[in-house]
Image 1 (cartoon, rainbow, N blue to C red):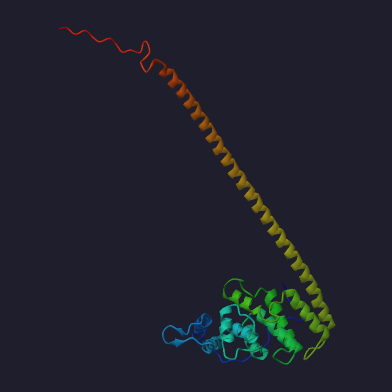
Image 2: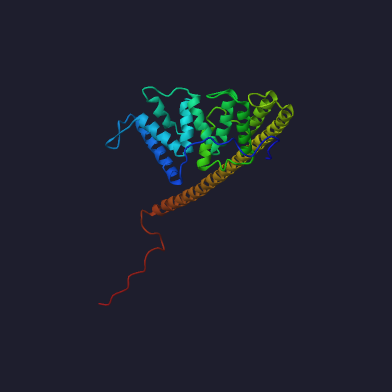
Length: 308
């Protein structure tokens, strides 16, 4: 978890954007919700929202941009995806681009500012994507030094566990950032990218074979840790499967014992009933031999004499 030599805790210097006060930030999610509303109606082919508001992809994009300007990170990442023709996490927003008379085209130059703004606000996957853009000169002039700076920032974020929880709002932002080019890089892949940058050097970055070797060693170590974690997870999954199989077998055996018991009890009852029926029928045949009159000894008492 410790940062390797040459990895600073601080990321690149933040770019200048108009400040947004606390109250202004509250309206970011509102504009994002309005953009979603327009997108849903446009996708469904509905002409109006409510009674008097026309559903419009252009109006939806306007609300999405306002949300991004008001510090809504989800809106920033969604706009970056749309400018790169990538499906955003909230896929319905794609209708805001595809339904325009002139749909948005692949434009890394327009996407990069939104990626940088999300990276500056702590989204680790956006940091990795920003490094990818500067390393390859996508939408900007290639800069090995800026790429290395963002790779180091992303590595520190992953190593120090700065991604908060995978649940909640930050987890959604990280998931959306991972859709961007380079945003899905693992910790091991970040180390490999830094090793290559310091091995070759480039714009604003002097080659440093010793530092490159350190990153290579760390990358190999991380790869072994990842493999061990994968094996451990697979073992736990297999154990869970075995436990489920054993539990299912126990339930089947219990169910089988219950059914067998019911059948056994049903058989005994039927046998007793049949035996009783036979006895009853035999008695009936014996009792019916006297023409229906009572047998000797079964007559009632003689009638008493009556004095006249």
